[in-house]
Length: 252
Image (cartoon, helix red, strand yellow):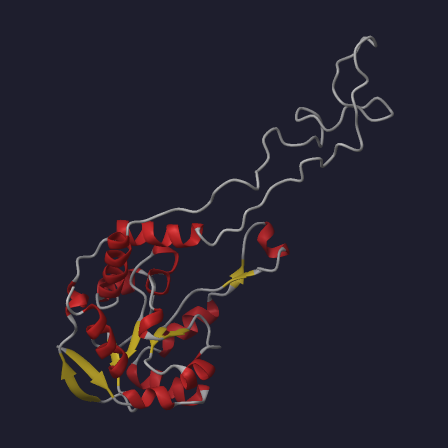
């Protein structure tokens, strides 16, 4: 049995969770599915074929020196073994990054990640902070009608999950490496996942909260449930959304 909360944080009823929440926890499949999804989003990249070919050329034989391409001054350039020379085997645009996964494996990974959201031990191991009694967090459908950030934060505080948003806010930091110079300076932790059958209003209000994602039951995938391949994301389901999930995966 799972508790259903109202907007004041009070338990209004108890319901049985859909059968999909009892699926075996498979971290291996979850990691595999996330890696496949991320690989399929990669953009091909590679070096220009004639990059560097305009600045150096080989003098040829007969001068008592190696045939390494050289500048006009005689300094070696362009060859892989020279200072600031080209890479021996640079990345090729034609490389295929796409990866495949069996449909049943992807489905099982999604269901396993969904079931992990109801396991308090796994959710806490992922680093989420909350004081709610049990998981998953289910809230009445009136939650979908809220349009203001303040109203949503009040409800989350009464239920006992607002501190996870503060954790995500404080966890924002400058990433290591050159990515900070390429339009992705900060790394931001993921916090709540809100699953609502009608997300139109709540997405506008909650979508800008640190680390929060708002999705409909049909949009649920492994990456939302297990960001980075780490299962156990703290998730809030509206009652109607949970029923739709049960209708979609209940017979599995």
